[in-house]
Image 1 (cartoon, rainbow, N blue to C red):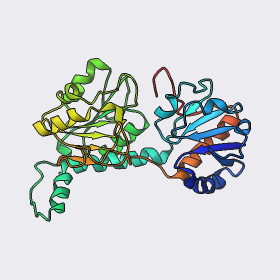
Image 2 (cartoon, one colour):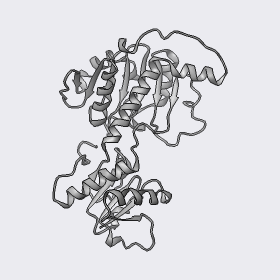
Image 3 (cartoon, one colour):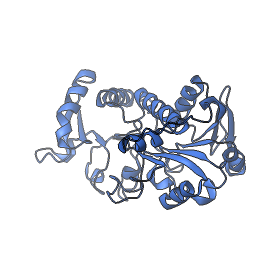
Image 4 (cartoon, rainbow, N blue to C red):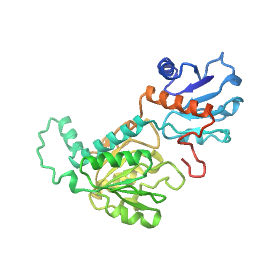
Length: 312
């Protein structure tokens, strides 16, 4: 079986090969642009941002695996062979890393880590007392999939109160959950820190904007680890400048890498991170994808299938 790879550039292929040789030695890995590779010989594809139309030219292709939890760039292909399963890559390590990142981001906002970083850059001994303990503030998580639930569990393990919101009703032991547009305002009003972990859909595009931010408690924090398309950056900056937001950790942007002249870089209340929240190791992703291929070969249902009706 041949698995063609387009993730991390051609320089990453030796590492991908080493990882798959450990977990699925029967798979033959080939580079996406290998001129010697017969397109008709490819069984599976592991991709991040394939050129539109390329996947449709693989006549024997049986399943497509995204290299990350988001498959926006793959699903946007107008020629995508939609009869094939498209699997989002959500191995256990990804949810763990996301939980770690969200905990770090929330605590950074509570302890005003950005203020300390700015002071250090100026060699300024800016002594101050954080005005509250993290346990005094409620974190609201938008998006209660695998990532959101793991982040919620880890925050609660730190003694931080957590509530959740999702499009459809979720029942989570020990956590109050809100659902649908009708309950969103009540959820936002209690979210001292808002964590966005929503998928990218037409409904969520531009969601993190002035109307939503205005429903948060004054001085709330924002952790954006969903998709860049969710946020209207000028509205976030305006909310920070007005005091409606006290700080923001932004890991995703509509255009990445973030341009050097983007105002987010220098804003004293924004921590910019380079889309680093939950990327698992290649070995963990290889283990997950190899397991999916083995299930597929046995005729079993694949996990984390992309649903075009839901958009994720």
